[in-house]
Length: 173
Image (cartoon, rainbow, N blue to C red; front, side, top):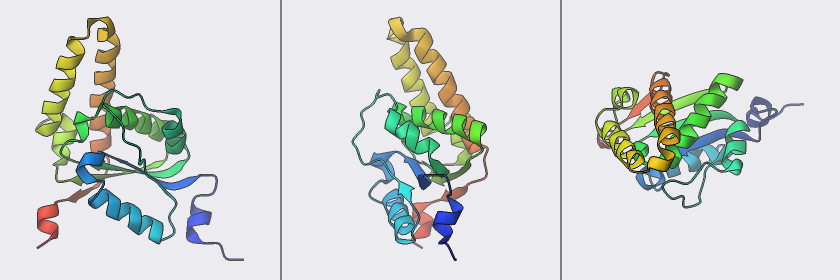
């Protein structure tokens, strides 16, 4: 009996692929097209279609989807680091990667991997804004500074993985 590559590949997983991305940057372009192509190819892909707000905690259903996915695709875009939700999700993805050995594929969409790795450019600006916001919340200062530290470590670790660069301006030439 011949099984489809998708079902044999992802034995024991609910999803073949989990997409982590900043919705306002790439949902209706790159990530939306990637999602459609994966689904059209028979790849069971998780994408979060709910509107999430800054400061939201990662939900149990997303944690489960991450843990039930064989491959995690991270789409780092210009404003990715401005979303505390994306960063919290990334921390959990990196933790899952270390614990379970899932496959992570970073995509650097119109950003340099070094900006993600070292939090420079738009990534440095976003981290500085988060830090300033956290400093203004004295009651949660220690918790938030630990959270910020986890974010910077996760960005560094993810950007150190082998990935793909995609520049939308050069893709149309």
